[in-house]
Length: 233
Image: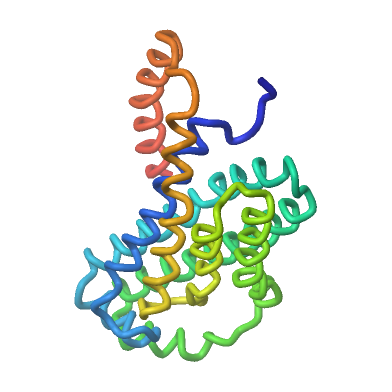
């Protein structure tokens, strides 16, 4: 079998966990109003809950990168142009959302160390500042539409799940954005489109042999130790 990245195990994990984590972060923000002054107030009043929303959303967004590569791999077998364009646009959009998540994380720290009032004032002054991703915001919307079209035309996804994937384009973008109805619709659609594909990919193939399973078990504590060491810098 030809090697491909991210492969069956990473790909299936990303297809399942990426959408579910993004949906979790979306729902955790749901009790609070949408715009950034209210989000900053929520960070000040409910730091644990908002930190969990931030972490799950960011993790889900990052995991969507290998998940998208799985779709691109399968779409590309019959619709290479749609696979390449859809994949490139979606990945640019995901990188933009990760950039926004970094700004959100800085806002969390600012609220913690400087207070909500000062954080709100500073973010108000700088909210419209231009940056590289200001010119690529169209990819956040267009990428999912092109990828959904490719998934449908290549029959990787049926009509209903391709439409569900296209709904991801409705997810609001920007810094310190909360949850609205479209946010839930978009992330629920993403789950409906990708989670079944991840489960099917996981089950479609042989179980790992004994050697691979032992290596995977040994890697878990090693990765945990490296993660801890990474926080010390």
